[in-house]
Image 1 (cartoon, rainbow, N blue to C red):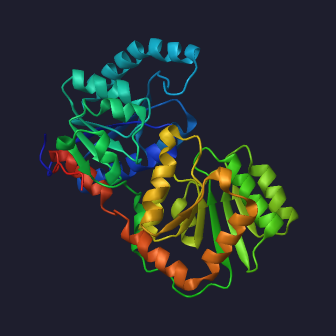
Image 2 (tube, rainbow, N blue to C red; image 1 turned 30 degrees about the horizontal axis):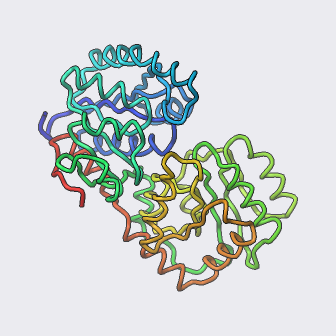
Length: 370
């Protein structure tokens, strides 16, 4: 492996959701900042979020033909298995052409054939796991990759300890910079509630939020910024408008630093990347984990931050609009409670996560799950 003073060629692979892509982008930013002559290429899926998110940052993007395996029907499984040899050959061809120094997989089914191809070609491989319970691809690749970076300590039990490194989950630079800037501690007359359902949207959460705010409401002045996903955007806009609620509703927000800067409280799913971002910001949250996440990993993600005192959480099946409205009201009105949760949230942050992963990519880092 080249020394720190040299530029390197990094190949990133993974994707399908913002939770996979944004840590990859943060790692690429850190590498290019540290070694300015470095180049980055990304192998992802053909899903729109992969291509649009990455091209916005100026990275070269390639895609391969592969499909997910977990929880799929028999016809889909047969299709996915049949596509694997082609995906492997496509990966080998791209790797041979690009000639990377290291391949970093960030999760998702596309990671499998790319990491396997890199090992066949003798290229150094590293994987990064964002969640408390690893996804199927990373779990299978744990024995194959040379180093494994984890975001939450509890996921270390799923991987060989001698090559597992606790790094945390990388956060993009604009959000890191917002987290280090001095926040205005003055009490705002009008609080801002931020609602994030994840890059794909969240119908159950959208329904609960409109019920909470439109039917029960809050006793204080507030505004809501709500990321709904594409399907529910128009409906949520109309409901807030009908109730006279000051709101900004969009399918997806690209500039999350701008959005976070306005937020006083987050209501959200429990995606690992969102949690890493709000920890850096010291932004308390009420979490509603996605009930159908693989291995219920969002519930486990939430528990880490709830046990640390920075968030509250409730399973979707037990949550009502009334209960959600009551929790939002308490968290926004009780200044002592709020400030304590904010401080505990910051204590859970790992702002140097991207730097730690770059260290592992460059020289292997220190094997430790703590």
